[in-house]
Image (cartoon, rainbow, N blue to C red):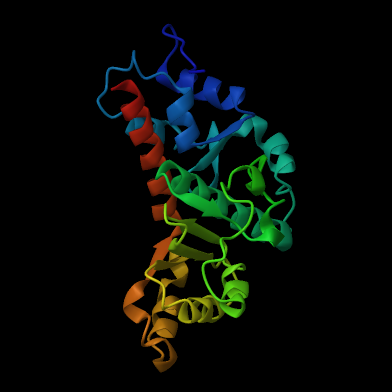
Length: 245
């Protein structure tokens, strides 16, 4: 249900929406929770982005994910981020971007898959197994190659039950291992993406230009966290517009 309070300010509406969502929200969630009908602007999403820049009221957890300063302790405890624990940070970050990819794939009308070892991990408060549309991977290839594909972080499948895109999220792990998976899957007409912080782009460029990966070099894209978050937000914005038409 949209948060609609015509007598309060836009900023107060955003705060109310975050409170109703547990003290935090992605930009995509805010686009669904906040009723823009009384906002006298043609770009309400841009207004929300400006509003959350107020560091006295909001703080950023990850690109596209913001929370209320007043709820900081509760929110960080919920996601086990209240202490400087590298392992917890990595698990949360990895699952967060898996969740964004799964939601984008679902909104695109594709079938989505996450590997068995990640099914019980959560995107915010929702287990990934409840978000991905596939319980198990399709048997689209030989068993030895399929075993390799099963470990890919997110796969989008098309209506013919064949892989359309493979995604590997590289927060701190070795990019070369992921490219090795893509190398083995190169005979399939699919897209390959490394998802990582923009600070790792130079490292990706160095590795992808090694002779070993010459055959897949032009087929592997690099997506940074901020761009992925923007794509997720844009999909929510588009779905809201389509709902109104």
